[in-house]
Image 1 (tube, rainbow, N blue to C red):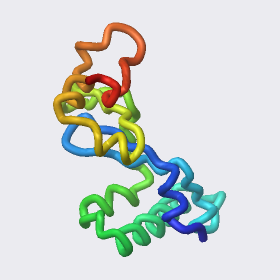
Image 2 (image 1 turned 30 degrees about the vertical axis):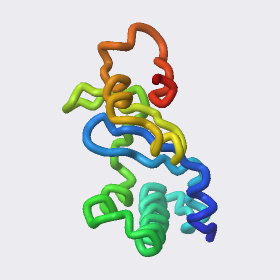
Image 3 (image 1 turned 45 degrees about the vertical axis):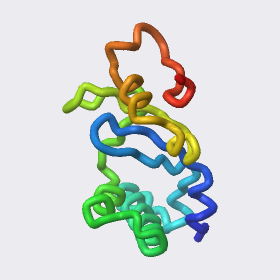
Length: 130
């Protein structure tokens, strides 16, 4: 089983388009956390996500019960950067690594999540606008 600390070095953050942020774990592999069952791959993903989330929650205290349940659910819809949140109409915005998240201001974030400002292609990252 791989250490969650090594895996979390390969992650990025994005604004959800609603009230919070997503952490995308780029190096996650279910084989590091459970045995893969070809007959029931969804259950394999659920078991791996449960073990990974449990490890993080016990060592970091970053999950409350609601967030833990959402993190374990393999059928949960994932908001991809530059997609629109159906409730707010705001964009899910890629932010970058931990330092980028710490340095972005709320005003810059709100400016870039407004889909009316995007004419064509991708705007500059939120932290690049001063």
